[in-house]
Amino acid sequence: MKSICDYARAQGWKIVEDACHALGGTNHGAKVGACAYSDMACFSLHATKSFTASEGGMVSTNNPAYAEKMRVLRSHGMTPDPDTGPWAYRMDELGFNYRLTDVQAVLAISQLSRMEDVRQRRAEIASQYRAALNGFSPYVKVVPASGNGEPLLHLFQLAIDFEGLGKDRATVMKALLQRQVGTQVHYIPVSQQPYYEKLYGVQEMPGADSFYQNVLALPYYVGLTDADVRAVIQAVQDICG
Ligand SMILES: *Cc1c(COP(=O)(O)O)cnc(C)c1O
Image (cartoon, rainbow, N blue to C red; front, side, top):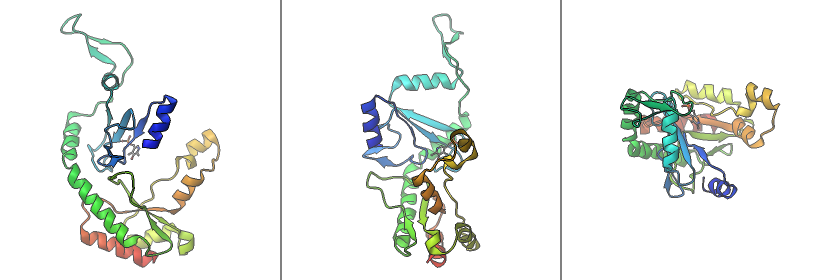
């Protein structure tokens, strides 16, 4: 974020970060969401995230004018108009209904209070995976620990050279599932989606394409016990060793 920010500031650009995967982490000494390197940061509270309100999301900013503008846009563009009377409101611009329900907001707030526990447990699981899976096979790589801060990882992903391993990804996923280890692929590059192919034609995105070829996400959530983590590690070592 720091280098993106340095570049963007020099160009006079504003930065809206998609920080959905990063809530609870730190980057270059700043908390994610504190907007040290951006103007606004967006978070999803969808059910698959580390902190959830079942649906919805939030935006953080340090800029009071942006905060006020977002509040107005969130609620039909309406503001109170006490000069006209205690009943009055005015609508200066077109807004939306982007409100979270109160029930969801309560859920989100109570989840945020668990942030430190969630951060610690996710960091523990990640370091157990890293210690056991780093270098056990020439065909399997783990994401190295970041030098830029303390991330609260949303996913724990392996990069597997399936060709070198001599098994394709579907075979590996099915074999893991037989050991009761569910895995997933996050994500198919948007450039490969029919919508974008129709818009821009077939695009070569070497980085995204090779990432997609190799990626496999392991079970990674706070409810995993140490025994679960060991079972996942054993299954990966047996199948990808
Ligand atoms: C979940 C997610 C989104 C989408 O969030 P919605 O709540 O579905 O709008 C966008 N970006 C990232 C990185 C996400 O993880």
